Length: 205
Image 1 (cartoon, rainbow, N blue to C red):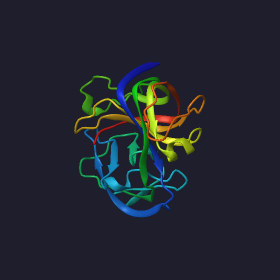
Image 2 (cartoon, rainbow, N blue to C red; image 1 turned 180 degrees about the vertical axis):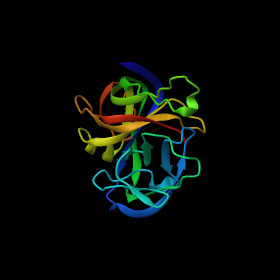
Image 3 (cartoon, rainbow, N blue to C red; image 1 turned 180 degrees about the horizontal axis):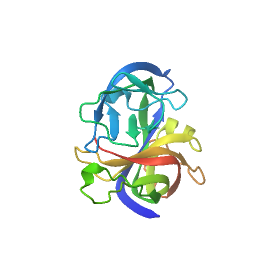
Image 4 (cartoon, rainbow, N blue to C red; image 1 turned 90 degrees about the vertical axis):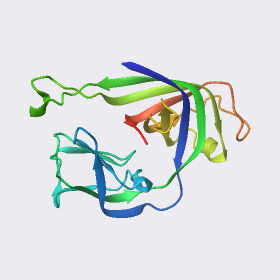
């Protein structure tokens, strides 16, 4: 297990708007050429109940990758060529912030899969993969929508940098409702507990 901590967190809720279909949207690769993020930032939260189609140079892929619905990312098992064009199709949802919290800490269940390639110059390389998490915060705020979603799945953002980079860990979680009672939009100086649902992902921007 690992642990991280920060000062600011956000709670984001999917709106009642119907998911919007997108087709053959461009993606942007990271330096490893394994992670490809949908380039249109307005479509970075994907409907978990809808399939995502991934194409590499026009050919539909059925294996060799994972889809990160929270953030709109496709992660390939092996690095792609710098000239490869990766396109994605699926459905995006709209999310809005309805709450937040302060002075948080999180316990992480971590794996370090090996990612050594022929470009590693003989050195073994690894990436950190966070498969499960739980968090707690000392104070929080929320509106009517926030309190109506207690005990339900929401998107949790754990910020480690609040500057322009907006570096954060992001994933799905459930806020436990025990003892959570407060006036709307008021900051409450008591702790809340968050149970992660699935993996937690590192994001910037």
